[in-house]
Image 1 (cartoon, rainbow, N blue to C red):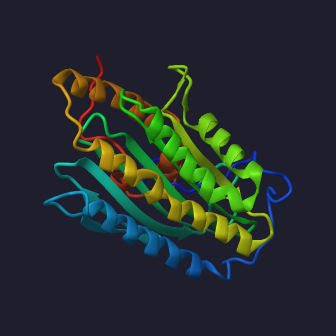
Image 2 (image 1 turned 60 degrees about the horizontal axis):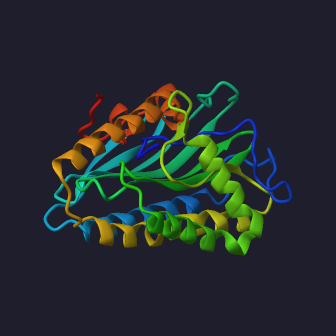
Amino acid sequence: MERSHGLLLFRHKQTCHPAKWISKSVFMVFPHPRRHEFISFLHMLREKIIVALEQLEPLDVFHRERWNYSPQGGGEIAVLKGKIFEKAAVNWSGVGGPSFPMADGKGAFFAAGVSLITHMANPHAPTAHFNLRLIETEETWGFGGGYDLTPMGFPYDEDTQHFHGEAQKALRPFGSIVYETFSQHARDYFYLPHRKKERGVGGIFFDSLNSGDVERDFQLWQAVGTSFLAALLPIYHKRIHHSYTSQEREEQLRMRAHYVEFNLLYDRGTRFGFQSGGNPEAILCSMPPLVKWS
């Protein structure tokens, strides 16, 4: 789900991960014998994130709405609208069916993920995006996910350095090349060709992580997930009460337009969600409540 994007679950035909521990395809038994363990981690992490974001909002809490998916599974939208978060969403989905809904898909599939988006009331507080996902088919399986930061016209170098620093620290135990690889993947993916610019200040992003060492891959996936709040919350504590002008608010709305353009034109999670017949409200949950094109 780019997004809190509903269903952010897909598989690359190609990968740019370190070759020594990433492979394009590793044969598996379907369903994966540790599927329930992976899903349990996603649920735990989602609840932890929801609690942390609610602590920043003085009066409001997340409102939840479940949805069903035919033939198997469903999800839950959780949306918060308040004084600090103009809109935040932390969504869950777990869906399956007899045919993977992408061009190269064959046979049964299962996809599960947590996705998050924050659109802040204060223009000096950046938008954040996060997702973790698991996808299985009869041929292979893989972890994916990452997080990135998008200042809406007001980037702070110290915030960018902190955000990337936490990502780098989380990935350091898995080898020196991993952070650089995932960071480059984020720069490549979150790029708007029609505007010739990156969507924001980057982050980390990966998919189809399946090296054959399930435990190592799971630990890396967990490290990405558990490092997100440490990367984001100190920035919000500094920026959510920053004074701003009406002109800065106008700039924020204008920059949000670029965010919308990426999600509708380029985001693979959006495409997967619609092709799989997912819940439109969940798929489009990443959209800001207000945006402006000049």
